[in-house]
Length: 464
Image (cartoon, rainbow, N blue to C red; front, side, top):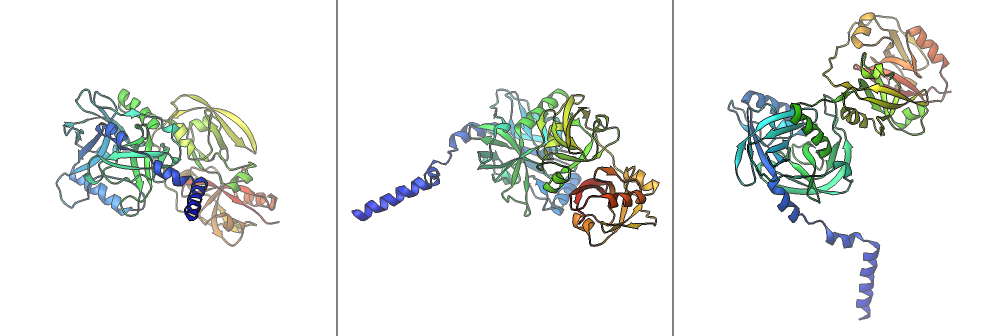
């Protein structure tokens, strides 16, 4: 009897010190949510011409380690058109359906299957490649529609549920938690205008375009992408926030396309070394590495080397925050931009432009002689007029050789173009040499370079 009392005391003590043992019995129950939400989810079949589909699938298989947008079938070597499967959900009782752009892009027929097994041919109202969203319309009435939540209220660690058709298995339910918010995915070639929700919900081919629910049964995201090295789920899935999606929907309904704000800068992340070199207490903001000629940024007074800390009253803590905020700003809006310049804060007023496709030019390959060795441990030469025109730089020197020294430690490589040192423009090899001699020792100095036509800042220290 005494032994049993001691054992009971130990169990109670463990439960008191480890509350997760108690909470394990109180895991969320999803059955009611699924019963209410499942009728709002649809299965989408999109048929494309065979040649376009084969080209598309071949490219995806060639890059298995990228963030992959996914479809519901496997590439086959024949000339017959074949359907691809995805998911979607009903956002209005009169037949508006939201899904991913890549599910229906290039399709000549889109078929929507409802939960009651009815099928309808859908019309594409509009699509937006940058956000990977498409709005469909079917001829139907009194349809069950989803409840819309607020993705901005999501908390990391919160439970979420996905409903979709992975591998064609309709109305499959998977659950997990929110792993992170505001993720920027590096594979977006056209710019990243979506602050993705990262989850560990199991997502596979066929889930694409399906809804992500919170425990209140509200849609908080649209499942869009996974990170995979195998082609299947590996614990990293990404959803488009519903707040972003509904802004796109409103524009697609009104005009069939989406307009976005444009600033006209290239930016990079601010790390602790760069923050120190620019006289900041901590790493924050987006460092401007290039300002495009004629852009709203240039007209508003932004310069290379400025660090943007806030845009239109919204803090920019990470550089990846800036594209999201600018893209959601209306064109022609006049906004305040808080920056750090020469270790001091100041506010500029910028009139936001309209995002459009930008063109690029390739750099010239001719490299004349004449170089100069300096304390950084590198050789440089002047740029030709043709090189400056091709690279869109007015000033700078080309790095022709790097040896052991501060430059190599900073990450400078042969072929880089050094345009500014310590926020001062480099106009020639002669001027470059004088600037190096006058640099302070044992201090972090920002150096702006252009590499592969992309500017960035590095931090260099010259030993005393």
